[in-house]
Image 1 (cartoon, rainbow, N blue to C red):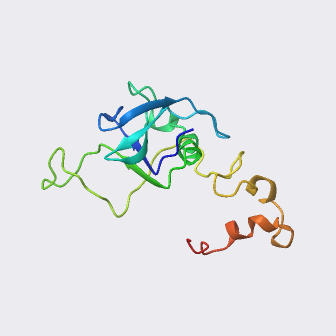
Image 2 (cartoon, one colour):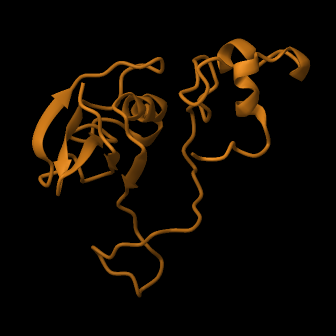
Length: 157
């Protein structure tokens, strides 16, 4: 299966990427179920990429129905290292006009009625052993999970 470097999750109104060259659709399954829609691999200016419509093509999923864990896991299965999520939102500031691009440094997620962790009822894409070792006390944790439970992340290499 094609490996992609960059993953792009399109929000409301962005259901396909015309800039994606040599597009191929992939139906995926993950430990968290199926993603929102097919994942489309290709390249953008020569960079391997994958696109996924967050709410599915035709906006068939409400925010609390979006299987975000399956979406992210499917991206990981395709080799994605960098993930960009695009959203269409409004602003209370008159200085921002339609089509302006803003990179927020904070946000509030008010989405309700969905799991908010990768470790609930399925293996985490970050630590495939987590579901087997989460409940025990620290002295009995599986050795391969130790890095997942440290307060600071291991060095990137």
